[in-house]
Image 1 (cartoon, helix red, strand yellow):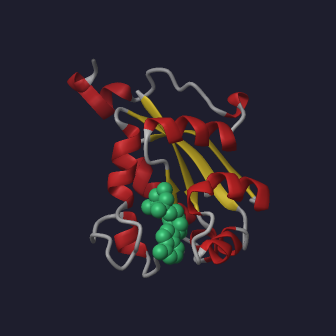
Image 2: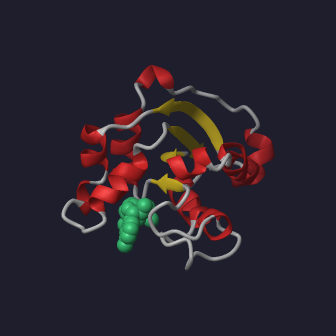
Image 3: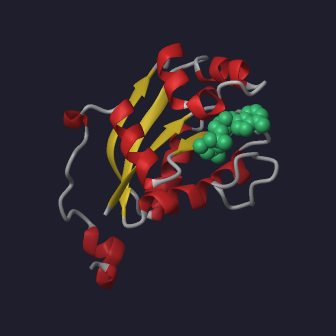
Length: 153
Ligand code: IDP
Ligand code: MG
């Protein structure tokens, strides 16, 4: 069972899509084990997007991430990191496949609806960045038989 970090970006908040996008993850069968709104600042964004410092769009990206609070959520499931990236779709919304979240909800490369951790290493770091241990819940085997049936190992 894996956990991954998702942020619903300010474009999602401003466009009233929090419920719809959250619903995509829930309907897929990912379990929400932590969820809250946070207003991000320079410090956390410099850390979170450290791999993009120096890119020409970096200041605009940071400004766009601070326009409203974001919704941070920790999602749990078998192969959750890969599954969430797969249903999130390609970074640029104009190139993302229809059926993916970015493909269905945005036209932007920058304001592309969600952030999703891209590897087990970054998921572990990012979950810690946005959640204290006591803000994450253990749901035990709740609904597991319906979500996975005999897939469980
Ligand atoms: P990802 O979100 O698909 O993992 P990254 O390359 O990690 O993509 O970039 C992080 C975020 O930076 C993207 O989600 C997007 O908001 C923004 N971004 C990435 N590349 C560009 C670009 O070429 N122009 C504008 N914004 C970009
Ligand atoms: Mg990334």
